[in-house]
Length: 332
Image 1: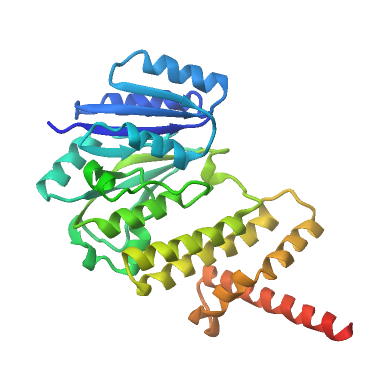
Image 2: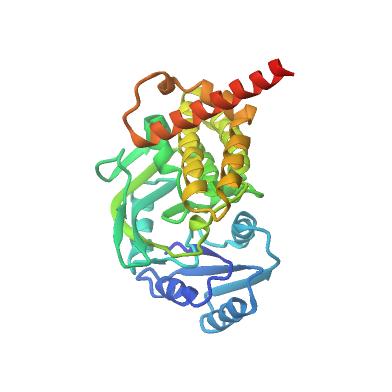
């Protein structure tokens, strides 16, 4: 039986960690090691990590200063002894037969990567299936069969995935440090780009908990700065491991995220209206963002999708700000 290493990066998730770790320890697939990387959590969470680790000799625990989820996962990767490796976020949980199914599929089809669906669970108990629209059923694909749109979907997260350890290590694939989001997307873009064969199971085994205060629900004041940095990194990865045809889809996706951020400035942030407007004006003066907006072919069309309308709105705001700046220069 091949060993599976499961890495859990932890940062101040407190009692949620009990359910997470128990769902792993009680897997029907028994040959596992659990690597908990405490990324500088508060004392309460650190003590919970100690308590959990003391109860099962399959758990390895490291406490470290806070440096972000990428470095925490990379430290976990350096500690792996299993033939396969997977990741679980510390406030999520998995079905009891997740790794039994993933190991069976990755070995049956001799794949380098296997992915499954997930179920998003909200604070109010509502659930939603998180599936890949581009793949209507379970399938096995080579790299050449993964379209740009499909790759956009597949690269989204590392927590419903099982990887061959030797493949990650032989290609020196790690998570990019210094990013507040999209680090797992870049990791997967490289992993998929170096994989010979990919397997997908259209069944949900992973439960993703969307709680208030989690990283994915956090308002980032420097969101656009980070998003543009991510955009540059993604373009570099796509050119190295894929080709230029994959770049427009990802740039369009990043623009949707930025346009949604503009909306969130007004709906979510607690800034004054004047401060909110100044934030948008400053955003629209960013030359890097303008350069990306100009290249989008959909901006010349009548857009019907609300997300694309947001992008169009952002584009028009940027043009408006440019015109205002030009008028100021003429007046002077």
